[in-house]
Image (cartoon, rainbow, N blue to C red; front, side, top):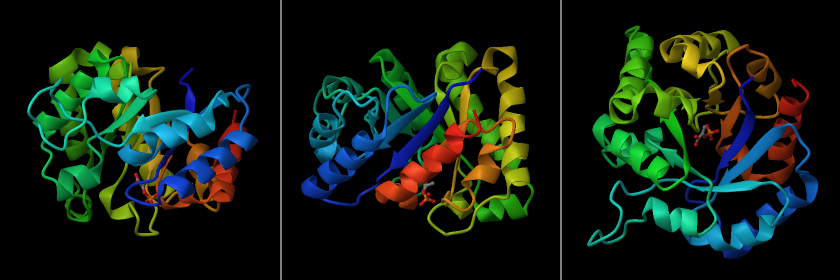
Length: 249
Ligand code: PEP
């Protein structure tokens, strides 16, 4: 069975004190015995505070991005090894904000994915279509292409050891969510693309997940959890969403 995960992407929000306090609150209410894994993705500069705050609670920590190169003259970049060194177990790769606002191509995303795995991190590969692509009925084609680029880089076996988050771009930070049926259609297609090797690959849904819509999304057969942006900044909301995933177990 695929592992269930609930992940919080804090994006570029907060400060050192608020990051530590949010992490402490999550850690206080989370127990390692849960069948669901919780991950938080704070800004790079708060990773240390957050790692210390979560301690041995079982809440895992990840980076929101990484550089595809190992080390060297890449001013402003952070390598996979640096993230692992700070205690990260996971890293987001190819978030739509990285693709749309910072020009990350499928090729760069595939290289970052490979670098993450080489450093022992679990990449959370984000894929998804824009509103225009959905309106032009290109959703499945776009998502398959984004996934194929990674398969070319690390082979199907490598991809299946990671986590994939389907995040329709039009649903991220907009308050608009894919319906459970729309989300399941894409998750089902991703599962089919992965074939037998991907039966236990964790597939997350992301895009305005909140306490009101989480249960219906998590009830879908190929959705193994959520990648949550806005609602992960409030401990109560995020824990509530996590609880709804635990209840699906
Ligand atoms: C995200 O940042 O990956 C995300 C899904 O954000 P939100 O939940 O705010 O739509």
